[in-house]
Length: 612
Ligand code: MSP
Image 1 (tube, rainbow, N blue to C red):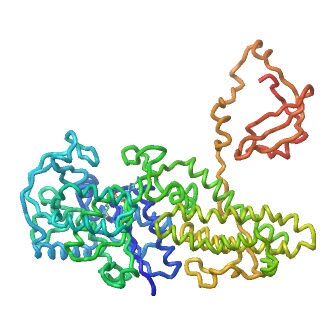
Image 2: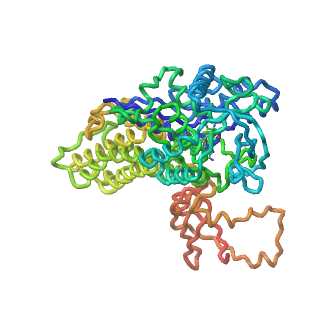
Image 3: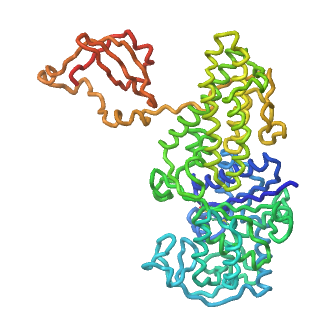
């Protein structure tokens, strides 16, 4: 039975400049979508834009533009970014789509006809920024509890959805469905929120105050509250978008046998959990539609320790990161750096650290050395391994770990533990490198008698890489496919055939096609190993910065001969030199590693300040 997965991201405010926080949810959703498609499941992956509300109206007014034209101008910034990030969404919804608007109106009408929407006068504290009312007890010192901006006292007649009516049902539902709100700590948070009486939800805004929205079908003096409009996108999309996804096929149904075959997964940031877990769930209850399988609230990214915001000017643009580091390194970093439910900090240093040590060193090295050795010792074709009976313990361990990998990854992906899936993949990368180190093919290559063993080692390392391509594909689709190409494989990683899941699928005789390194090391002036030295370095004095003769007399200059030179581990800049200065041998650490190779320095004479 083919399983279906309906995966959604939030719909992003069209007037936000996309930053790494937005990219995070969408990349995570993409990994899930690619993963499930890879294993033959039917996936519908939705993302899109939230285009109504006060902030858009105000921004359009400021730009002296019609709001719809303003949205049309802004929408491509998200759409083109998704393309750059290789996001494989099936559809892209915009809440200004006429069919979405009609669907929202149909929904409102259905609830109104059931008397689940009523009109009432209301006085409360209104936050213009968040576009919502707060009660007396919510407001802290006259400020919005959410965005901390001043709120204003507002009396208004509005339409309300009878949300309070569903409070007990929702509490029971959350308690009975452990997988509904994840991670577990967030589920407890929502239950905590639901301990206070739940109020009815104002779902309208008078046009006198806000006109940019969807007209209420039963009162044209009002438009729909932006959150009601936005949340409905998850089901309106299934009704009208192309390719036509079909509500019956993708939406969950808890109550029938089909339930286990359909998963509806909303990925959201922790800041919008209440709107999803409470507003959306009760709206669905009122509409008599089963609730999604899981609402997963992920953590929040800061940048170099600070909260990202437009006003601070530190809203990290994913385009800039991709320009510098490449799309797959960016995708990898976001999902590897922090557990999906937790907060994380984005810093260039952390990213460079992971690229250099994990992508360039561990993975790049495994691929590169394996292909180089196949070129040198096997004329560029994958050699034939010995029979399994001749295999040693290290061979068996490698084969066993590779065979287990996809099962382990499956468990972690099911729990949305992307970082743990990547850790498991990394264990195989490291095992592959250790396997080569222990087997030392370069030594085996020296004796013709060791040829069969050499062939086995080269084959096993290449077969390990083939498994890695499959496991990496959802995370780093481009690089995984390129890695497969270099291994001489023609298979499509997005749609492997069942034989490809078995160890031994790689055919002896496959011609490899070694290419450029997949993840070149990022050279920086300051890497971890250099930090202590470069931080203290003063700029070199210019020839016009004169010193006195007395200062000069203090300097003991010696000509020395470089006897040995090597790189300082983990440093790009530092070289460790053994220098004979006549009276003694000195060890000197010099920051010249980017200018000189150690082997070029041996035998050279250098000037040493011997009393520094
Ligand atoms: N339009 C609403 C969502 C409606 S869904 C029916 C909205 N849009 S948003 O553009 O402000 O935020 C979209 C998503 O980006 C949210 O899930 C939010 O958590 C996420 N992020 C925004 N900033 C973020 C970080 N700094 N870090 C991680 N995710 C963040 O809310």
